[in-house]
Length: 317
Image 1 (cartoon, rainbow, N blue to C red):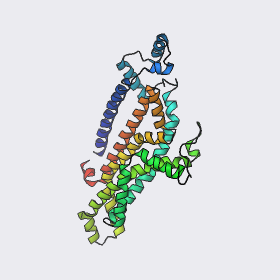
Image 2: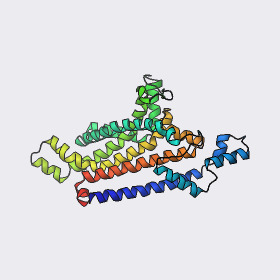
Image 3: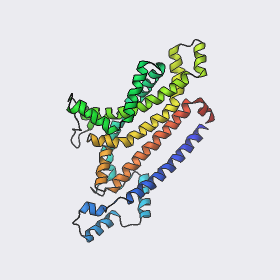
Image 4: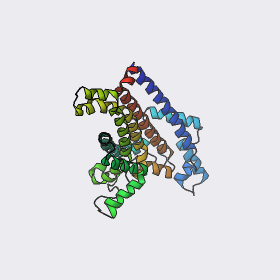
């Protein structure tokens, strides 16, 4: 029965990706300007523009171009970049890895940190530390990521300490992890954006679980407090929090665009901005579908975690 539930989730996720592909392809058709003219320049003759449109397949009907593009997605072919003339998959290969390093580092730190701080606040609710941490999390939750990033640059790279680089210093071809110091500020920016939401949700859910009947019964039976928290309270609180974690991790795939542009980080965000600037439609479509796929996969994983950690949902499945 559990397999059927997951199967239905997978089918639904596939339909979502199909709908997103239609929206992405339709949105790129509405981009202003002409891709061929953007490549050749304003002085290009109509004959050269027509020849390039034919070479790139831009003179074909929209429906034919959509199904050709969609068929390529199933085999991992994202098409050819209209700006560079090379394969989109090769163009984005290294950038995908760079963005994954940044998002993975932020997720590995922010998720356990948010859960731990949420549990700590729930156990000390109403105290001064709880109130101070709640106020601090609200401040960071209200700030856009570029404001946090600029603040970190001002503190650690320009005005105050000047101990970290303000932008990425790695030249093309050099792996970003070759200079770990250039990863600190963008990673810290993402952590400060994501963690407050997890903390607030974990605190609220943990308080509700601690006030529940089965936790009170465990305490009355003489179960040690540490075991009550770790074996009874925390697992039951993780189910609802998994959805918030999924939303925040999915946000990383899209929100990293602003952070990468701010720190000149060579990832998908910088590639997307360059592609929009030069009207490189194939690259815009590929990055949009990658971000959508991350959203779908992360939310699917959150659904599975929610079912496994919630006895009621597990029994229903």
